[in-house]
Structures are given as C-alpha cells and as structure tokens.
Amino acid sequence: MESAGLFQVNRLEPELVRPAEATPREVKELSDIDDQEGLRFIAPVIFFYKNKYKPSSSNSIMEEHDHDDPVKLIKEAVGRTLVYYYPLAGRLKEGLNRKLMVDCNGQGVSFVEATADVDFDQLANVIQPSSPFLHQFLFNLPPQSHNILDSPLIFIQVRTLCVFFSFLIIIIIYISICDVSV
Image (spheres, rainbow, N blue to C red):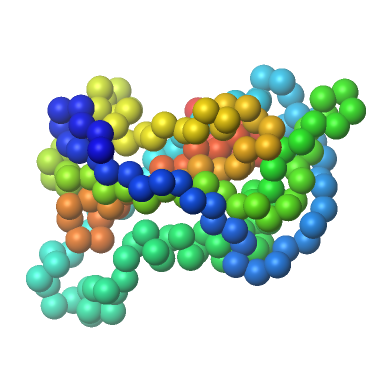
C-alpha cells in the first residue's frame, strides 16, 4: 500500500496478459526511424474514466454492467486486442549493429490491478499535468524493465476508484514501439 497525502493506493502483483488466441511466431525488424538510440525509452500515458451515473440510478446501462468489473473487462480486452497487434506481446531483441527487432513470441504485456481510495470529485484539479500528486497515479516498474531488451513492451495498470465503475488506465510503453506524445 502506498500513501502520500491525498489518497492511498493498493496494487496487486503484476501478471502477464497474453494474446487470447495463437499468434504468428516471427521476428520483425523496426524501421530505421523507430530504431534510433534516442527513442529507446519509455513514456507514460494516463486515461481517466469517470462514471457519470450514480450507482443507485436505474439506468439500463448500469443494469447491464452492474456486475462487470472494469479490471476484468479491460484485461480480457487487452488479450483479445493482442491477437491483432501481436508484436506488442513480444520482446525486443538486438541484431547485427544493434538493430532492434521484435521477437513476436506471445509472452504478453505486464498488467497490474490497483485500487485507490479517492474519487474524481475529490481530485478536482489535481489531475492536471503540473499536479504534485500525479506521481501517485504512476507505478514503479520492475528494475529489469529499464532494459529495453527482453522486457514486456507495454506495462498496463488499471486502477479502480471509489466511485462505481470509475477508473483510470495507465499505460507505459517503449517509444520505439508506439509513438505517444511525451
């Protein structure tokens, strides 16, 4: 459990989410643009999802999904998505002259489930990028993940909040694999 003033975070141990079906086993070289030394780092992206319905409301959307766990749904969706984007479930390797390539081996992406005892109304403007509490949303990566080779290419954390079906998704990805705004 982590606490740094505003809220507490409980994280489970990371697990690997593999493609939901068999995927091709192959090696794909990165383009010369994506293979640049300056792009061999990771970057976080945070998505916030606020439930606009009250848990007690009699909304048909709520009735359909009141037993669905967003973490379970997202984990299953990641596995299904990796079938089509199977290189993301692989690992980076270096070839001749340090040329990066993806070993499409289906090992999977890192997935962490977490909870936080806070809701969006309590956060107010705290979720702005200059927030001193923004680091509480991020998670510590395993030490080996800073080695771009042989690590999962994507690290995903789904954190549920106090409000029913409100959650955030934190994705940390290698820039060499997927371009994101940094």
